[in-house]
Image (cartoon, rainbow, N blue to C red):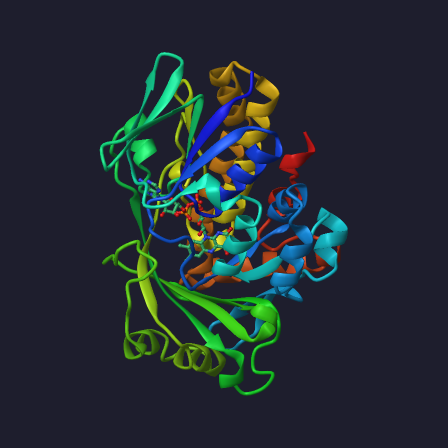
Length: 395
Ligand SMILES: Cc1cc2nc3c(=O)[nH]c(=O)nc-3n(C[C@H](O)[C@H](O)[C@H](O)COP(=O)(O)OP(=O)(O)OC[C@H]3O[C@@H](n4cnc5c(N)ncnc54)[C@H](O)[C@@H]3O)c2cc1C
């Protein structure tokens, strides 16, 4: 029996799920609340584990053209610029983990995924209010009062997921005690060669700054995260001012100050996550991506996990035939432990990135130095080889 599916949410995760479902001959409708498709003006990095998903969807060469491949992952001291950790990426990750690492403008990556999902499949202005199971169907109620039915519903509707709320109640996401500024700085606005073409993280007391090149090296995407007891909305578009952002990093290394000062825009928001969910599915309805495991951005894995989920849920449904509930159980069994581990490790990174205690910093930096001796084999300062080596498409 040919299945039909509804995916709620046309973000990076939802489009991946839709592309993988279509690839398997499963009929799909994607419901998106926005009036227009797109992504906000910010960057996103994809690691080898996510590139393997794009490869399986036939999108790897497009992804390579649109992405900027950093030379290395480099951790620096916030004030002196001393290198604390150095992991070569270009060439090495492809060799060791079977795929490359790229930085993107989110809109470019979103558009690439969209090319694998015909326009007719995506229904805009369609906001899910709730979901329920009714006999042999999963039902989506839209906020305009209409309903749609399918054999299976996948909630890819982000951190405030309405699907999650219907299945498991209305627990709000957790404010992590971290907020951030985010912006994009034209490379031409900086002194030539000021920032090497690396994925660079500056560790400071109670704060860290990440930057990487995108769009052929013409733009540098940056995020400056800091501990805060006040939270801004977890919105991508809360505008702040240059003065506020520059003031927060005024005593940092001059390279960081230049980067932040010359930015085109200043977005600010609080960083939220959730504890790992013990259950993702009920009957014919399941969750994926930020809808079930939103995480702190310190491992740059939230979107990577959403891509992996999207592929995995489609694969489980295609292999499981008409027993949809059993397929969804297999999907979540395969995904829960891995995503929970990444969620919790991202929390741990927020602590280690922002250490203030001298002894703890020394211990961290000595460990980084030991790892560096093995960096050419893909050994990562953050101990995340197990994340990068995974190939969700290999089953
Ligand atoms: C500062 C920061 C930096 C990050 N950097 C990285 C990175 O470098 N690499 C990485 O892998 N991850 C990164 N992430 C995480 C990544 O952005 C998310 O994990 C990823 O976007 C999740 O994708 P998603 O498709 O699950 O959800 P979303 O991107 O949130 O998409 C959800 C979609 O559902 C739609 N929607 C919501 N509600 C409804 C509804 N009720 N009905 C219909 N549609 C609905 C939304 O409009 C949206 O289109 C970062 C996150 C932050 C905060």
